[in-house]
Length: 111
Length: 113
Image (tube, rainbow over all chains, first blue to last red; front, side, top):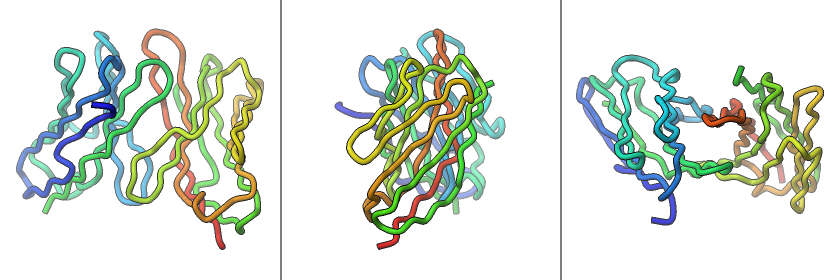
């Protein structure tokens, strides 16, 4: 595709359930980021993948959060045992050299 | 370090006036400084960027200035219009193979008609 694609666009889940959010970056982009944005708040860095380097996981808020990137392309962010405070928009972004391109985001609501 | 501080967090200006948002970074090796605009309910999008070998860059009503000595860079919007109302994020990138980009906390700009 022409841009960063994220799915699902909206997800409502019950507290305690696991969720998986998918990001398909722009083809050829070696860098991939995950951010969390709560309503009216800034971009909270979660995790960064760059090529074959070990990912920077310093932003993951707890061990319930994990992410992987298979084959240097598609990435999946997994949230286990979801809590209400996990409700937010999860933004994925990718870049090749300078410009970061964001996806539309996955809106997660935990009820 | 990778930190970038952004202020103000909110800014209200009258239509037609200028708006200035400032960011300060800590890593003197940082070499790339983009600005992103996020309209309500939409994704952040790049509006202008500057590299460390340039002191100023303009694109119509927006400009970015960089002071490497003081390690700060600013976004200037002139003749503001209601459609400029959005959240603006500054960012900085450190060089090298890892090249991670770090964002500021954002500035909510409101242009009052």
